Image (tube, rainbow, N blue to C red; front, side, top):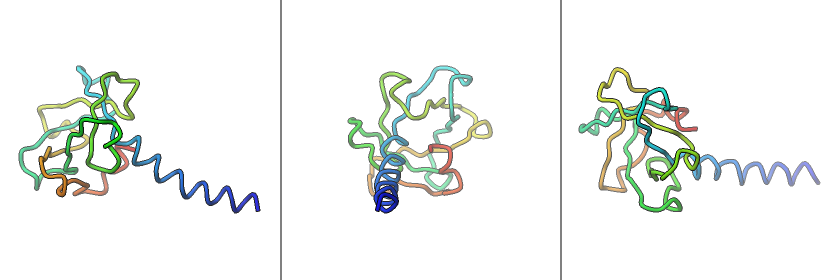
Amino acid sequence: MNKFIIIIITFLILPMQKNVFAQKVFSVQHEYQADIKVYQTNDINKADLVVYKVNYESKATKDGLWYFTDYDYQAKKRIFFTNEIQRADLTVFFTENMKAIGWRKKSKQHLLY
């Protein structure tokens, strides 16, 4: 019976944690401070991830909804915006259309988890 409860809890809690924490980011000033180097593209077709900025932490519930924290310790990932695409780990496109958010290159998902 105990094993059954542990399995149920594992399948219910782990997926929620993955989404809740993965989309909280903090933008750092220097490359060496970052967990991930990000390039912001103006072409959605070149993006690995299409992102929509949310104003409240509680709204960052799935991939592509980013909440920028005020302090680095509040974020799951510290990101540095680079001006050079070849230096970036992840290329993002910021959209105003929430329906467009999500991964375009799923091979890069591990960067936010």
